Image (cartoon, rainbow, N blue to C red; front, side):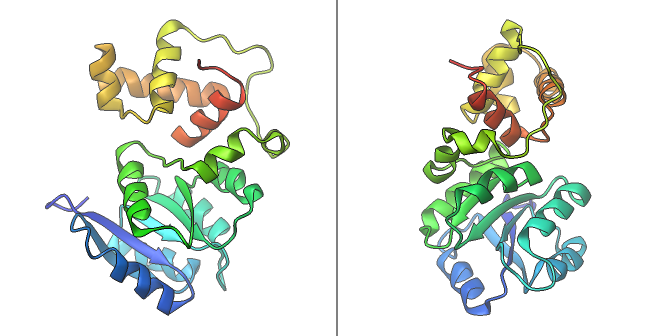
Length: 219
């Protein structure tokens, strides 16, 4: 994030007029600054080291390198950057797969600018953004049929502290907020989250939320 607390955002989409439209519609939000545009995933990855955005709005279908491969590479090579998929594909099968690849949120292109702004703010604050469209996937049986590789082979047993941290993560509280609520250090919160991610075989907070809801680990 820049010194004046602006969130630096990049957008990757092969339709220039759409990119310009999104940027224009977001001008009313002064805490968001677009620092880069890209025509495709490869173009985006080449430009990231120079612009270092906090958040990337990324289309799915792009030439040369699509949004799926791009999300995987950003997650691997730039783990501090949050990727929000912004696409016309209203297909629930994509949602779980993109989240598994490291995406922090999934929005449709007809989304209002106010929701895009909320998604950007939320992924900066908590690491993920879950809207009603994404939430539907969590309760669909077909999500359990998608690729998922938890490390545990037996019943999941959580300590009271682990369950409380997991519950607060699912309620979109930050590590600092969880720390204050539980009267433990932020480092302890992060250690518990890391331990849970390792146990569940997931990569990020989104994975924790998906796993917790899928396996009914929280009340």
